[in-house]
Length: 135
Image (tube, rainbow, N blue to C red):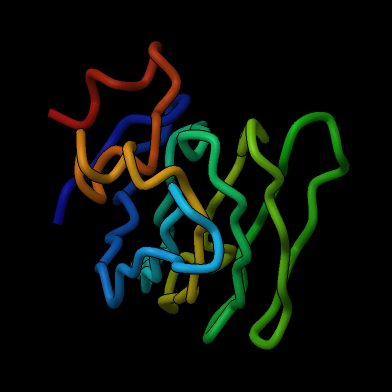
């Protein structure tokens, strides 16, 4: 498991797993991507954006702390959802628990070209000041 130093705390990183990727025939030039994102206890994702994608997320288990753009910070429990519009700055995406895992189901609609050029890894664009922690 990778660890990172966000702020002054050593934190594990989230672990995304691709579960599907489909070109959308009714939306030429667009693809839909599905991910399961595992949050080990105390895990966090550095501040990021999603390559111009529209993102819908559903908390499968656990509790997530979420902050996007200048909106208030939200605590989202299992069964809760959130949406990220294209260009949204996802400032906080953390597991609320220090002892229990959390998990998201994420669906993204993105330009197919983004996937063809960079693969699924291109979907999460970490803020420049945090990129060095990813190794």
